[in-house]
Amino acid sequence: MALRMWASSTANALKLSSSASKSHLLPAFSISRCFSSVLEGLKYANSHEWVKHEGSVATIGITAHAQEHLGEVVFVELPDDKGSVSKEKSFGAVESVKATSEILSPISGEIVEVNTKLTESPGLINSSPYEDGWMIKVKPSDPAELDSLMGPKEYTKFCEDEDAAH
Image (cartoon, rainbow, N blue to C red; front, top):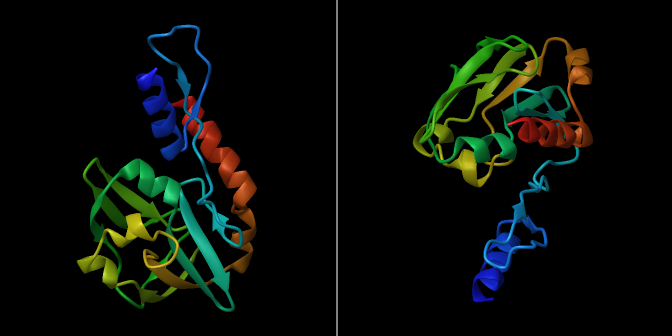
């Protein structure tokens, strides 16, 4: 009984939902990821980058879902200021304790700012992926590219389907 209570409270803390089990020794758990960190007002790429378009500038970073899968980010490689990015082309990389992943630009445009804080504090991507952990700001060359990106509901469904396939 104590094991079941511990498992239940741990599952709640980790946002897992427990299923009733017929076995008294090994309770079964079905993992149902919580995508509460998918934010309204952002657009999402299927490569797990987000875009926040405000005025003539679009801010780009990686999603909370992506950073959760990467684990602790230990190094970030970003482009120089005043360069350009192309849709679905690499503009940098994120190295975690698990792997190194390329970061793909969800849109094309001219880089107007790079988040230099990430050089000294790459963990900002883990602790604040949508605020302090942004990567670059871009002046979009084709604002219509934003229309091809997913909204929050579509991205949540995409992540659920992707996780279920793995």
